Length: 158
Length: 113
Image 1 (tube, rainbow over the protein chains, first blue to last red):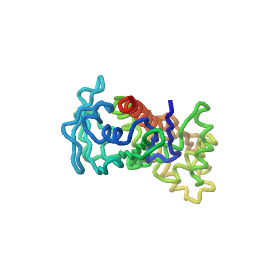
Image 2 (cartoon, each protein chain N blue to C red; image 1 turned 45 degrees about the horizontal axis):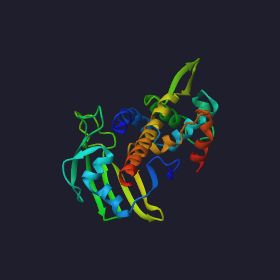
Image 3 (cartoon, helix red, strand yellow; image 1 turned 90 degrees about the vertical axis):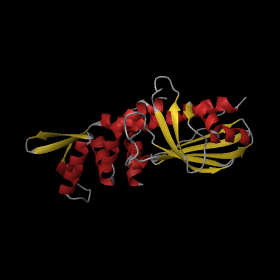
Image 4 (spheres, chains in turn orange, green; image 1 turned 180 degrees about the horizontal axis):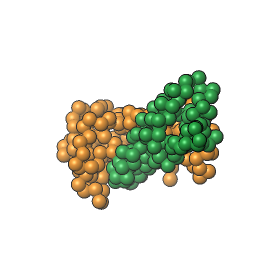
């Protein structure tokens, strides 16, 4: 796989993914900016089309979560360049009211690449679930908790 | 979608942990407890430039969030880390990250012929 994924550390406000897709930019753009196509790969069925400022509901199509809905609010659409929406990143309980809870911002950025299209996906705002930033400093690896102390020290002294 | 399932529950659990860490002094306390094991309030206050009272207040908040555990040794109160809560908080973001990886793989199959 020619995937190159980068994740920034130890920033926990955002998750960033960068990949090169072997497809023309216009193709990738449609897959992201068209609600039906987005739904195909994201596995959600939206109740409308994407437009700036618009709120949509989506029925989650993953097995076992058929009752779950997601709500997104489209922030920005810049054709073939940029697409962004806000959502509640953990809103799956159909009975819960998430409207007052903080949202994260999901951004898709498209650029030309030699092999096709570079797509960057950034989800940010996790710190508003206060201070996820700190938690990332505690990333464990196979060596366990104590080995991470160096990361923590580096982080707190930065 | 695993993201809106397991991660959802994890975040509900993790939120108080993140909030409890919302302060550099607390992050330092966690680092200290992680390096040196269970410590008394006076030991934890040493070299922090923060008053003992303030340290105590931080520790209480962290205790409430399940980040540390307090126990009494004689007249002294000893605090130790409760790493399982931290682990849970960390796992949430890992889950979100994995879910994006999976979504990207599906997008790749969708756009690449």
